[in-house]
Amino acid sequence: MQKRINTAEESIDRLTSASICTAIGERLRRNLSTENSQLPSHLQDLIDQMQRQDDENAPPAR
Image 1 (tube, rainbow, N blue to C red):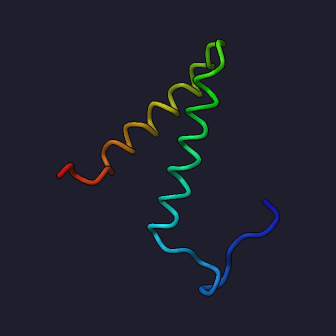
Image 2: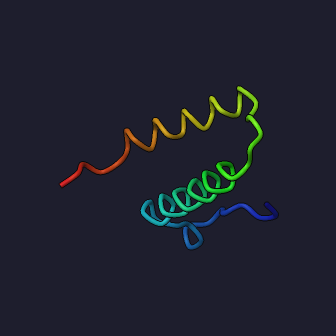
């Protein structure tokens, strides 16, 4: 990443940030699920942790 966001005019709202994170996670899941190789255990642990956090932060079902 070349440039960090430093000013209030360049910041994004929480909903947009969450949407970006969700899109990145979905793409990672899709790309990682197509590979037949086993992930290193530390990477799998991180992915599992992200999934737990996503589940905890998910809006309640209606």
